[in-house]
Image (cartoon, rainbow, N blue to C red; front, top):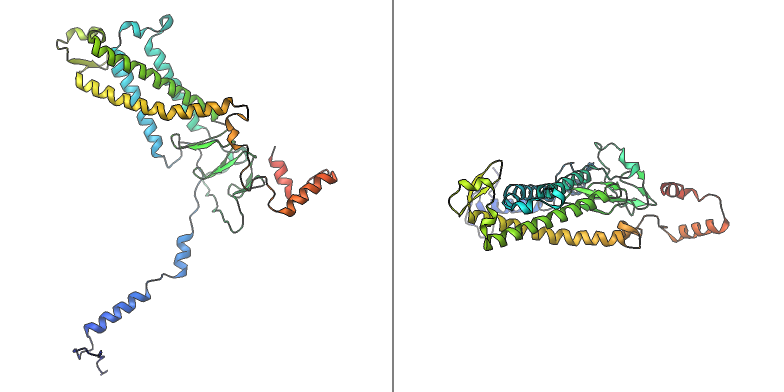
Length: 341
């Protein structure tokens, strides 16, 4: 038998000394502190992602769901609670068009242009017909300095326009890229910009209409509440604190504090929407009416690596080509010259 492994000062003469076992466990833990190099390399590799077609492609953004929820809340409360309480005079807009029709037309127009903006694929023409079921390759910065160089996208593997940009959220090149809208879950570019602008304008007009309705109802409720009870269904209601919702199709009784609470919550929601949408709308309105380059003037300066000479030698080569009056550019710039048209 092997002699017992004794430690200096250890009173245990046994081989299974707890002090020896503790040292063995500590040594084993120290040997496992640093993982293997192969494990680190495996974790650093990012799996390729698929390109998104439009705003309906998954994953859906939480802001997009909030947008639809707010639209439904405003539509239900406006046409089911607030507008039916208005007097007959307010229900008739100019030339006999009902107030329901005016606000309903704004809501319907906004819904249509909103769906169109989401459904359009704003990708570059050379990328539009690609197979979106195939993953996009992972960008390797050791081979290329930028995603787009000389109007060629190394991820989409296609020649793109000078104003195109590769969106990291949609993982594709977008024609005339303006921005990626999280509320639409889609990119805004040349193909859907004016639908996006119309969606903003219609939503702003709808919020203003709801604001006017709410202010009138609050003032009339404090001054003369009987003017809000002109609907024939109120004839069967004896209590003045009882109100009817969803007139005239589905009358539902509710107390005054409940209606006031709903009105205050919707008013707060409308004010927040006016602040957020107002500044965005006037910013885009300024860009569209500017004398620079219209709604996409913010992209007048080409980004890094796109259409620029990557070295001093290449710049001298391009300048020499123009000075010599050559009929065609050097071979390295053929794709860039063709991609600009």
